[in-house]
Structure formats: C-alpha cells, structure tokens
Length: 436
Ligand code: PMP
Image (cartoon, rainbow, N blue to C red):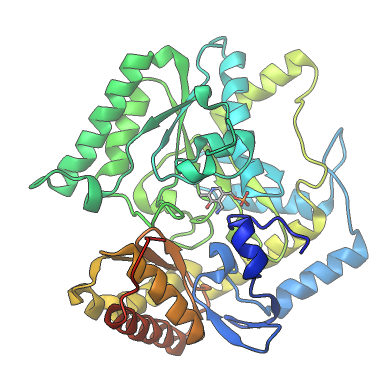
C-alpha cells in the first residue's frame, strides 16, 4: 500500500484496494483482472474522446519529440502554447480574450481567486476581496479553491481560511423551492438572498461571485429558469466580478462550446480543464476579459512583474494535445453531436421518471443526474451497475452520468438498461443499515 487515495476512506482502502485500470478502448476501460467496463462518467467527467484516440496520442508523441518541455516565464514561451492561447481567444465568448495556463482545475480556480484580489488592488479598491460561493459547489482542492467548495467533507479537518469566502444557497429547485414556488420565483428568491448577503457584508468588501454554470460534483444541478439572469443583475448592481467555473462544462459537455453561452452568463473570468485535452494531459486555463486583463497588466507594470505562474503551466505537450482535441471537436461539430447524444440519453432515461424509486432526472447536454429517494439504494445501484460492467458515480442520492462525448447509440442504450436493471435489483434487495 503506497497511495493516500483522493476522496477515499484510507482505512477502508486497506481492506478493499482500488479497481486498477490497465487499458482503454473507445468508451471502455479494462482492469488488471481483465474486467471491461463502459465508463459512463468519462473518468472524472473528462475523457471526452474516450480512452484510445490515436490523434491525441500522436499529437502528444509528436510534441514530445519536437520539444518535450518549455515554460512561459520571463519572456519565453513554446510554440503550441502560443497557438493554443490564440485559438482559445478566438473560441471563447464575449471579451474573454486572454488566457493563463495551469496544470489542474484547482490551479485555475486559485489563480482566478488571486486575480480578483490583484484586480481590485490595481483598481484602488483593496477591500473588495471576499468571494461568494454556493452550497454544493465544487471548485477544487487547493487552499482557496477548497475554501470556495461548498461540501463540508472538503473542509472537515483542514482548518481552511474560509474567512475570505461568503456562502449562498445552491440552485436546487427540487430540494430548496418552497411549496408552490415556480422555478422562476425560486431563481428570483435566490437572487434576493444574494443581494441581502451582499448588503449585509458590504458590497465594498466583495470582489467576485464564483459558480459552475451547471453544478457537477454537487449533484448535477442545471440552473433553474431565469437563475443566471437574476444573479447577474445583482452582481452588476454591486460591481462584483463573475467567475464561471467551466472546468466540467467547458468544451462541449452541455451541448454548447461553453455553458456560459447556453445559459447566458457573461463572465469576467472563466476556468477550464478536463475536456480541454480530453484528459490525456493535465492542463487547465483561466480566461480573462479585456477589462480585467488591462487593469491587471497596468498593476503588474507598476509593480515590475506579474508575480504568479506554474513551472508546468501551459506545458507544450498538453497544449499540442489541446489543439488537436479542439481540431477534432470542430470537425465533429461538437455542440450538434452532444445535443444529439443528449436527446438520445434523455429519451432512454424517460421511463425512469415514473419509477417510484426515482425522485428526479436532470440533464444538461451529456451531464445527467438520476436522483433516487434513498441514498442506500443509490449506493447499491452503483455497485450492481459496476458488476454489470457500467461505471457510474454516486453523489449523495444521485447517480451521475457523463459519458465520453463520442458515446454511441448502443452504448447509451447499454448504460440506461444496466442502470434500470441495477436499480430494479437494488430496490428488491434493499440494503439495510447505515446510509453511505
Ligand atoms: N472546478 C470544478 C467545477 C470541478 O469539477 C473540478 C474537478 N472535478 C475542479 C474545479 C478541480 O479540478 P482539479 O481536480 O483538476 O484540480
């Protein structure tokens, strides 16, 4: 035993070691015991082009041979890194015309949080430092990104410096709407609560609001009707920046290039990772609007340098892979393909809506959540599906489905039939005892 496993009970891991994967083909992975699984969650919402894309592998190999490493510090850079920055600026919505590269999503979020401070300092408003984040948000595992995360199990035992974070309600219509409240009325109430929080804390102490356009690891929560419109009106009234965390949703996952376009967000900063390289190489990006970039550039000029960066950020191999992934996405007409697959998945999931064990079925492109009434049945269904060769993910009472964007009709049918059979079996053999 050598690893301290992320998001795993270390003591339980001593008796039940992990399922160790050895190879991949299309949307499937095979473990060291020879069992093959259809990975209906793309690893961690990220292997968008499956596990054996020859073009991504060739791009990585070609760049490894050409120039296996270079950085972007102090007046130097690498060719694919420059090309990717230009390509992303052309794809990104609005005036998000600048990018900063890291290796992980957490680095992108930590960078965004630092830039909020830097920006308001440069604008001569140094008290505007706190960031508002939501319950059920997931923003990463760095000191700041974990503080912004809204799950208690990411805070417990870590003594995070959460004084810099203010928390507001999650956009879960199913759980948090009042009886008779419409979706729109619920969104307006969330916006009023946000405004009350800002007024109580003082808008002059708040620099930014961070949100995933569609909450992922907090349970697959697409925004209720009018949500982002109402929230952004409040932020605009109080001169508060918007950070869109598109680490899951960026590059097609919701059926648009960026979920901000689909749900009408106009962010000042936007984080991306995962689908950026199809997860074949660790690479993240923070997109920055002209307004924020120009203030930061002026501030950095006065200070003599922009004192922030990561040794491996914008790694040329990762950037070469990202350029190839984007070329593939453009050739396959990504938004249209994802919406087509999404409609197929939605139709396949439709019968589950009338299953008495099911509380809700939610979809945003190829992010889906099937929420059950009983968490124990969710856990049992997850295990049953795994024994039937389909990997899902449990988030509380919800089963998440986020297959590679190349998932076929037959694979969608397989995912849903295995899920339905597993649920039927789990309901008959309802496990007793403590909730997991
Ligand atoms: N933000 C969101 C929305 C995420 O889903 C994740 C990872 N699941 C992160 C940030 C952190 O990314 P990483 O694990 O690459 O640090």
